[in-house]
Length: 222
Image (cartoon, rainbow, N blue to C red; front, side, top):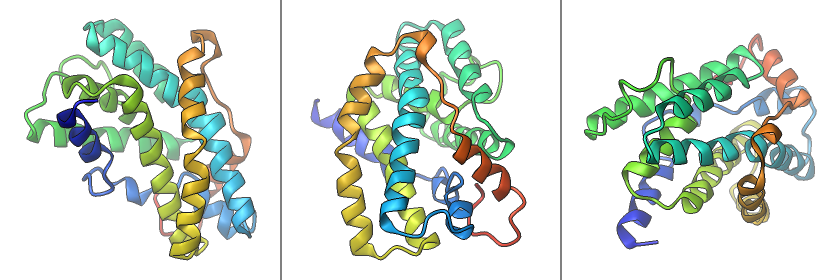
């Protein structure tokens, strides 16, 4: 990957990117509060499961298709996979998270004078859809973009764990270094998935998210 594209990818996956991803735990907060995740091992299994069976089976392969569609300006396919992603969110909280992250990224893109997406999408944009759009616009290679996308998600989950478990900084980094090793296999599998194999239904995540919607006291929006 050329240096300019690498630098743009580093910018795109930075936790300082002003889209508000830090405000979401994707059910992790409820899982901790309810006693489901009491140890580093249970937390690791939780994040690993969502990363491999959720992100790896839904967002990552959709990111591939969205990247290809943006690249050849096949806007019907852009809208199809955008709709597919939004329809796949299993709770209102997870759907709202995706739409709000998408809106925040869209506003940032407009400020950066990247406006080619505005008149293409027929409904609210998934964050993944716009992430793919930026990757194409900034000429970030598709596979490297996927690595960055999954790493950014993982880093946010680890950051959430430092607040909700709470998880110490050293343990957090140890957990991150173990889980990061799974990313290459996730990306490789996503490249091989057929359209009919794309999709994820994670009962534990859906229950945690639904319960979190009415959790009395919470730090995160999901």
